[in-house]
Image: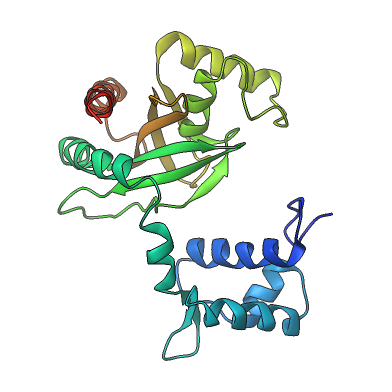
Length: 240
């Protein structure tokens, strides 16, 4: 079974649609209307309305003064216990890297066949802010973080369902050989990204990355800074 948007549904379709609403609001960039949510899910407005009312009752969705829908404060309580230690360790390292490069720096982890942003830091006094919000998801087959993470999955653990075309397989092998990934215009149009893979102590794969508008920073410098960030993170994780 597939829900609106083409995602395969395993288990409860109602629960899946509720989660899709939260994901949609998280990446919308601003409040949405009920009609917008219904269109995204591919369902009648009345169905979307019932789902939204349930999420509102649990504090997961709230309405703006103008009547738009946004994520509710109840999500903060749910998120409080998610990877708290890892995020706490990552943010100071990302902040230092962002200050050095003058670019957005973030950390993404593998979650099944997707990369999900765990933490993100914007550079201070940035003229143009490039957002990579925590919770942002995309397929491992796209972007630098996807390639960096896949480069660590020699046996493709947990991602057997992913179709890896020959060209991408070659790029992943290149990342394994040189130790970093680079892409442009993939996840966010107009942006250039560099990422370095990091193996977490529990065996999970992650990546530390940076984003820029165009290739306005030397790749060599960015790779050096991000590698230093990975080394710092790994050292901190070993002390946990």
